Length: 286
Image 1 (cartoon, rainbow, N blue to C red):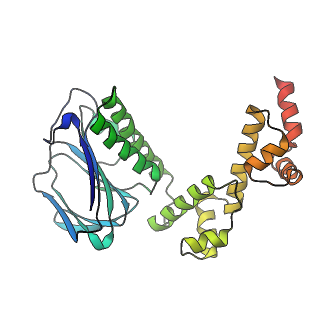
Image 2 (cartoon, rainbow, N blue to C red):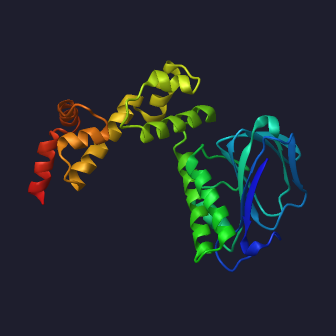
Image 3 (cartoon, rainbow, N blue to C red):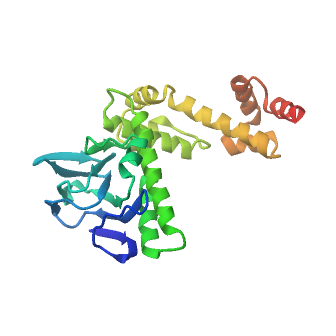
């Protein structure tokens, strides 16, 4: 079992504070892999809000006495004085991050980011950015460096914003599993766009069929994976043409093309001008 957490002013006592609009009181993570079960039960809840993010595996939460399985890619919002009852099981390999927060304007802030107050389980999608932000909050609470309380608020607001974006971009009638897998695919293509990408190998690495990946990726993004990669390559090529003095051969290599002539043909087909023509037109406008 792995545990890491941080507390405001090094105090584990729950508190309600309305001196500022939003205050982060504590943040932490649990990763269960050696213990069979980790239960939490606070019949009367707490004075503050709690937001939990299931990063991997799954957990069981109880709402009005009824159990509900919550899988990775979801967050759970528990309001002040609401019963907190949930269990982690080692067989499910859960990795969960949590944050407690309070403040004078929490409800309006949550409404601003379209975080629903009438439901507990919220689709958030799976993202390494969530994990990064939670870890940064833990670190700030442990080190208490200059301006850390303000930074904590900024990190939490960024989490709210990412949840809002995930919810708004969610495709109706598509399962959360599909959306999570396509989020993983998009991040993979973004990170490896300038490498040779083989869809067959990617699908095999995720235990999926090629047709399943192609069908669902296009449904989510309106582009095939290769069209998606091409768009990233062209946008980055434009950025390099506009902001650097790299020649066309160097830019081609940076964005993933060994053959600069082929790159130039593709660029012209997409942008209407060759890379050299695009740069010349840019210079003439300056």
